Length: 408
Ligand SMILES: CC(C)(COP(=O)([O-])OP(=O)([O-])OC[C@H]1O[C@@H](n2cnc3c(N)ncnc32)[C@H](O)[C@@H]1OP(=O)([O-])[O-])[C@@H](O)C(=O)NCCC(=O)NCCSC(=O)C[C@@](C)(O)CC(=O)[O-]
Ligand SMILES: NC(=O)C1=CN([C@@H]2O[C@H](COP(=O)(O)OP(=O)(O)OC[C@H]3O[C@@H](n4cnc5c(N)ncnc54)[C@H](OP(=O)(O)O)[C@@H]3O)[C@@H](O)[C@H]2O)C=CC1
Image 1 (cartoon, rainbow, N blue to C red):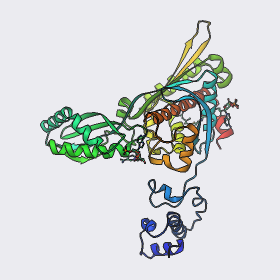
Image 2 (image 1 turned 60 degrees about the vertical axis):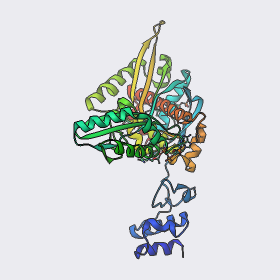
Image 3 (image 1 turned 180 degrees about the vertical axis):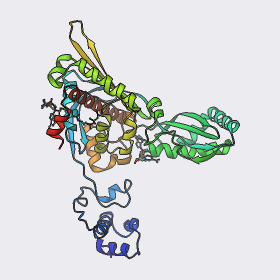
Image 4 (image 1 turned 90 degrees about the vertical axis):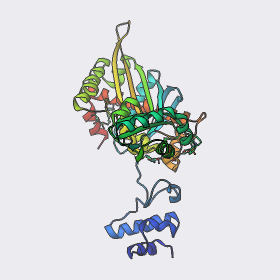
């Protein structure tokens, strides 16, 4: 018998483990059995969690012990006007969030950017990193290991790239701390965010390092990568895509649409995003880049834990005087470590794939890597719009009233 009730009974009797149900029933039945079990044990009703719009089997690579889906509202902002290295033209940007006023804000910022003639955006660096840590006897062995690595980059690339038909090893940066050696491998992972790809490839290269040097692998990730933690190395060296977007907004547009002046926004940015962040010891010199990145990540199937890395964004806003005496606003965001993909991970799930379709970026690009570059550029322009609108609201003292009207 493979009905949900029988399966739930068998788990409760200790006859089956909760993560084995897919071996005894199809994926949707297994999820229903787990829901039933949780409902019985917690006295809850999981009707909404169980009301999902895709075959549970499609989510098999993405989740274990599935009981249903968390449904986050999704909206669109835009069109986003981007003149990029990979992205071009106008795109609606899907964003999923529970924060009222966020889409209104980004939409307002995009409207201003559109009226100003659009934004430029470029990916300036690309490299997904994985940094294993090795044990050595001391500094002499550490130097021997680092030396061997620097002289054998080709052999290490051959080993790493034997595990992937898309990934390319770009560089290995060594770091030594006493008897620990960290090798920060950086890969061009094309249209994949690349964390699985880079991890598998680095595992293969590590076997060669262990064979040829005195170093012993302690952990395939030694936190110099640095994945899913705030880290200065990502802010300085980059991780995934380093992407910058900018726009020049005429002063009259700032006044008409953001209800303030270029000077007031520039001052708010300096005192808040630069000085305030410095005083707070923040790694993020921005207002809320993580808001746009997080909402875009949820909508398009990115790994949401990597919003951490995108939070190190630096926002600049400068008042630029024109010859006619009026003042424009130069606005930019630089996201040093935006980790995005259009293949792999959560991008294949039905709603996430549809969201990528809205951008015209589902799947691999031509040439490979161009779709992920374009996604990074579009998200960066979304973040720029969010910064403009929020700084405008702060400079005109509209933040609290906006959230009274829209956010509750
Ligand atoms: C709320 C607004 C936009 C009103 O701003 P407004 O200028 O009074 O709005 P408006 O009614 O004149 O409309 C202007 C444009 O905004 C957009 N817009 C306006 N309403 C909507 C809507 N319902 N749905 C979609 N789009 C909307 C739309 O583009 C519209 O243009 P139109 O299309 O009409 O020509 C403005 O006050 C604002 O942006 N406030 C800032 C809110 C914000 O950015 N919140 C983000 C979260 S804050 C946070 O989480 C982080 C924080 C604050 O803690 C970080 C930190 O420490 O800084
Ligand atoms: N393992 C880890 O330590 C971590 C894993 N993750 C998870 O990793 C997943 C993302 O890893 P990721 O490697 O991106 O994805 P996948 O593991 O889903 O692999 C994507 C694969 O798609 C293939 N591919 C097809 N077309 C392309 C193309 N145009 N460009 C690039 N690759 C292409 C590549 O195969 P081939 O290599 O054969 O060429 C690539 O390895 C997410 O689910 C994330 O949550 C997150 C953090 C850490």
